[in-house]
Image (tube, rainbow, N blue to C red):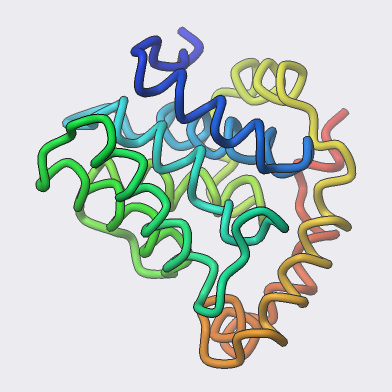
Length: 192
């Protein structure tokens, strides 16, 4: 069965918030991040929290929300404010913040909700783990949320952020795994 998007008022508001700020390639990445991740992480997931984290995780890369700190820190702060305004309790807000802050880490996160965002982003950005996805589900997600030249556009955003924040998470990924070289080599972009 294909994964679905949570249909709560807060999840819908998060999608609207992302839609207002993110260009289409980045918005679709946020949806794919959640859907790829939740297709593989199926137990003990707070689906609403994971979806909200996925929708907001890269908003720190947008013109509307780019800040003076690492994009993930900006995203976590945006999410915290967004959820506080909707009366979420502190523990669930921290869960969303953690999912955003840890999504670029290479070591698997032990929290299933945070792992959804981490794994989903890894699949969408570099294809890491995509072989574990059901091919029909993968193709269905890509048809619903197409890549829209994601590899080239995200590579540009990635390199800009790494240059802007030399101690940030993208700069660290570039130093450790040369991630910028992996964007165009993602096997997702070569599916039949």
